Image (cartoon, rainbow, N blue to C red):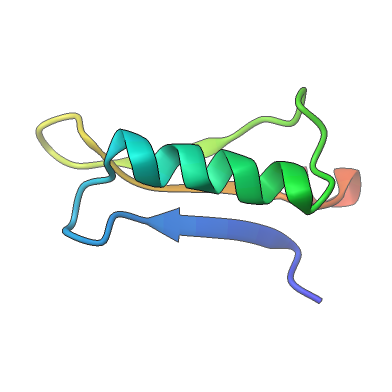
Length: 59
């Protein structure tokens, strides 16, 4: 079983819709709302990828 969920932008940088889908998928997987999210940014400061751990043991 994966220990984290990761999403990337289809066209390099993420759109708001892609980010919203990631949050929806994380909620469906049972990730609590207080879990920290990690983000990878491009040189221009745009979000390229996000990930969240699925269990507290992985924080």
